[in-house]
Image 1 (cartoon, rainbow, N blue to C red):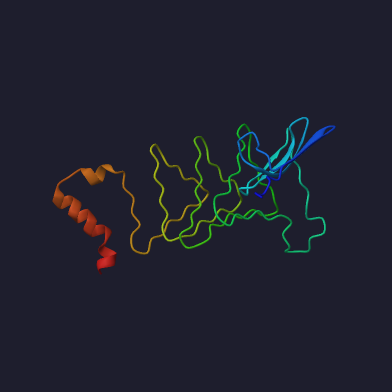
Image 2 (image 1 turned 90 degrees about the horizontal axis):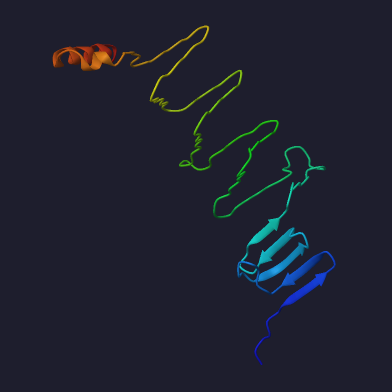
Length: 182
């Protein structure tokens, strides 16, 4: 005798419970509870979880955590984690906020179509190379400005590089590296 499909569907006043039946996308529901207003949650047999809330989804945790013990962990063993606010802002608040890219090949990229601002009393950048390329202008201002270069510290307006003969350009290059060549 073939195994009968395990289907469960129970309508109660104000909510519905389902299991073993198809959802609106054609997936088989493992377990789901939805209110008459369309709010609730669903687990599907292919391992997906979906939650729907019409207004604010609020979760509170960490009331009894000890120092150093996390109050919330979201971990994806494989795949990306995407946080979207389609018509709003994403605001991260905390005593400290750290963005860490793991692995030696990890990267942190910030892309903005309008403005990127860093506002802090102390701003530190450390690395092997620093590149700044602007299509219009770069402005630097401070009470005191120090620049240091162990091998080369030079400034040009750009016009010097294209003016003059090849011999003049070669002499300019030799001047730049004179200290290194000594």
